[in-house]
Image 1 (cartoon, rainbow, N blue to C red):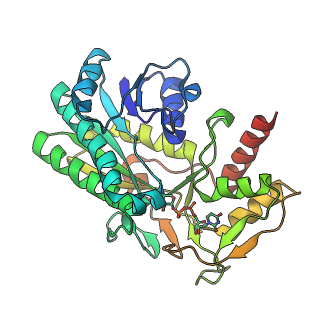
Image 2: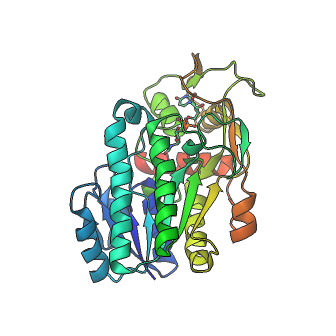
Length: 322
Ligand code: WQD
């Protein structure tokens, strides 16, 4: 199968492309290479394209035709929450503009199957375990673009007979291969490592939440498991009964910030002790995925736990230092 992967040179996309190649499928990558890295997709066909730019749909359709694409996995997006608050208009244009181009190109070429990368950010200030039917109330423009993206894709799927699956990723972490580790410093694990590398104690934003140890609880899912979820979806899409289906992708297990920080410190014995900071604005106390839908319907479940995630990150870090 030839699979168009937008954002294929990114952290998640490159894991997915490598798994596709491993199982004999052929990824065709479209990326603006702004955040991505060509070294992660060495030897794979790739095209540089800004999907939100005027005229991108036409260029993409031509490319999909030439490359004989069978299905699309659309990961390309801007994903910085803070930046989205500062530049809401740009975020909507970028993320919805890119998705619009992808859908238009699919209609123009007759490609019917799409996996859309959504986010737990659609749930906003959720509490505890969230199912796909929990209220969706995003609390920042980033989350809004993901929810609006689901609606857009669902509407087009219904009207045009496409099959679309939206995956709501929880907190993605880890490295499936050392060279594909997350190079951005936007989330907890890379932020902890950056502090330690600078000889400073990792920061804990708030330890007075109503959780077991007072720090925020999240559902950390190994990036390799997440990538495998896309393959399960891809295989099931032709038989998906409705035009649009949504799945949470997490482990169903919560881990606290303190557990993550101490887990990393245990693996790096010289790391300075953690320092507690004030709460970060807008952080919900605990958000964990209910993962029964994807397990029941597609047979996918995460195979790695927090220890595996942290081991993989430390291995990747050692490989980089060598
Ligand atoms: C996790 C926890 C922090 C850094 C965000 C987006 C979401 C998704 C993933 C995707 C929080 C705490 C962090 C640090 C800390 N986006 N923390 N010290 O906020 O759950 O989700 O990223 O594309 O849409 O909202 O993830 O990794 O930023 O934070 O204490 O140095 O770690 O306060 O409780 P979050 P995160």
